[in-house]
Amino acid sequence: MSSEPRTRGLGPPTLVRRFPPSTLRGIAMPGAADEPRERRKGRPEPVAVLIGQLSQGGSERQLFMFLSHCDRTRWAPVVYVSGELGFWEEHIRSLGIPVRLLTGGRLAKMRQLRAACAAQGARHFFSWSSYTNPFGLALLGMDVWRIGSFRNALFADLPARLRPAWAWASLSAISLAVCNSRETYDEIALRGAARPKPVYIPNGVEPPAIDQIAVWRATWRARLGIGDDVILVVGVGRLTRQKRFDRFIQVIERVRKDVPVAAVVAGKDFGCLQDLQRQVAQANLNEAVRFIGAVPDARELISAADILLLSSDHEGMPNVVLEAMSASVPSVVTRVNAVADLIEHGETGFIADHDADDLARHVVRLATDRGLRRHVGEHARSAVMLRHGARAIAHQLWALCDARDTGGIAR
Image 1: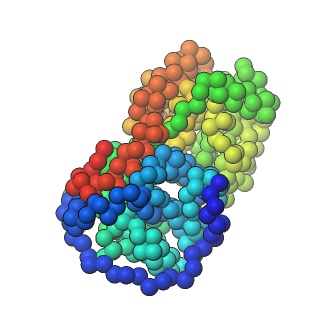
Image 2: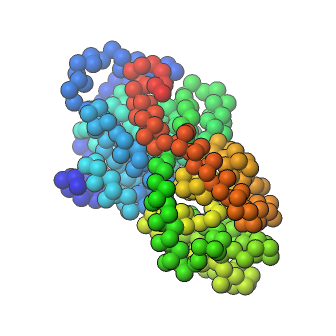
Image 3: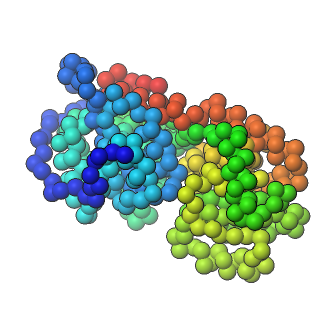
């Protein structure tokens, strides 16, 4: 555990030394390559990493994996949080990485970030979402290499009110844009702007051992009181409109006309639970569909499933799908953003339209064919182990910090 004090906020902003503004050419910042490397030898480079919150989400898990595979002889990250602390705070602190909460209004938080980066001597800034990208504007004139991220369907994370202005700020504040889907990469590239330079890097996953998957499956099925012969369909995610668990329920209702499946939904409620429970009751599914709230580690519950069902309207690269694939659990997913980068339809999973009947058709096919479930699950696990290893993905992300000095994108 780190000895870093449990700082819940930063102190008042200090005076900031102002650096002459740099001009961007491509993605290399002139002046960086001219800086004597001897000045940086022998000590790790400070990196300011900014995320909106540290609750139990897929983006937060990706951040933890990124930090876990940091070469601490080269980089010295500090995590700044613009919203709320939560579940992942202690996990990140256990790596010996400081976590600091920015407080006050947005402008106050930007001033705090600028002052902290100046005090830290940070030459690298890594924003973890489109929502936090605009904080890069606070670092203009400081010769800081600003890496941003788009981890949902382009601007889907941004506030609906004044979204065009938010979108401008999210793009203009950064030098480099990490996209976890090819669709988002293409959308940014087609804008033809000199910056930010988009780069496609998918999400990573750490596949559990086969023996561990079996233990998790047995443990969760016993906890739920579900026998091994029962087909279990699992949905995981925050209970928000975006996730469309109302569609999930419609799918289960249609599937049960052919197969007596059981279904479990895990995730924190954000105002949708009562409506969903009402829908379950009206469909006479009280014995078939359960909402169990947030779970400490969704990978364990997913390992107990026979099928993962993703019913969202939009996503980036869904972490739960990666986790299901790594546990050899076949997925049926709506056609959202990066799923085409993840799933080969019919071979490593099934991609459906945003339609309950289409989703149900694929769920029924899997539920009634044990051999197909095994085939898809095994091929899915092989695919993610080949292309989405957490260590390799983290190394690609950390290599972006070198891009300012190499004049290109280090991969």
